[in-house]
Image (tube, rainbow, N blue to C red; front, side, top):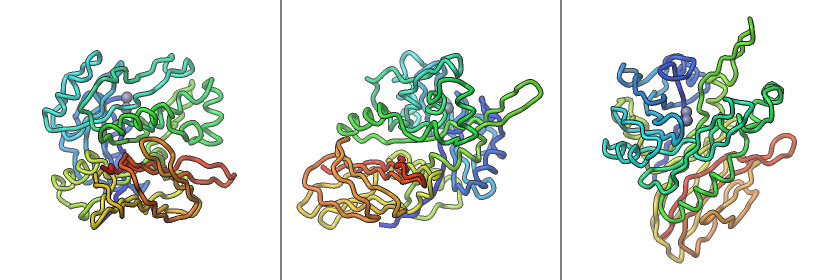
Length: 351
Ligand SMILES: [Zn+2]
Ligand SMILES: [Zn+2]
């Protein structure tokens, strides 16, 4: 089983909605951050795609999705050439319309909470948990978490200059719990992103840019694994990237804490192997193999959301005796000795 790894960033807004930079400018920032691909997901539009901007910019593959709905129930759709009508009250209509066009998608910042210090307390959660037929959910959204982390703007900006990552360093446990509970029943892909807007603030004559794109492109990245190298042809390359996103053949890596490239999680059973997002049947020889990219990591294996095993080794093999949904987290020790979430794998389903 070949595994070519490519690093990308998923949830990004450009000037085609409320972002502050153009698509080529964003692609240049992605190149600076060393990314292989990005997906631009503007609100209720695919204008970048319509204008022919899909393709390679400075060595970065730029693809387009769209974030549908405004007041609540934000849904990020990929693999569609046209937008679908918004429906905030009945987002199942949106999910089904996207699927009908051959696309797929995920619930954006579904457990977002409001904070009176930002956006006048407005927030945009998902409130239709009986929805079905969506591919996954965003378990870690940088912007959403950061806005909720501080009691006042002053506190937020103080910490922004001391440690900009601090407010978003833990995914919301409620989102993880929902993902664990739903994915024990059916395959469900975990996504992450920064919700990058390249925010520009104005204080009288002073302008301040907070969370520039190239900073966020070093945070919550998506590492896809492909059987073959990424094609130079855009059509094929798009199929490869979207194929990995649709099936969950990727992990989320917070590259801000240290490069996550090289993390691997596979399952073996009899003569078969499974990668993230795949199913494999249980046998007496079944086991999981995890490789951490650093010896500063703590590997945690979960089954149906329950912690099964922990190890400080860099590479482990764990025997599996029961069917279930298995996933891995790696936490990394900072210089001050604190353990922070670093990597979230997508699950392997052992049946
Ligand atoms: Zn949103
Ligand atoms: Zn967004």
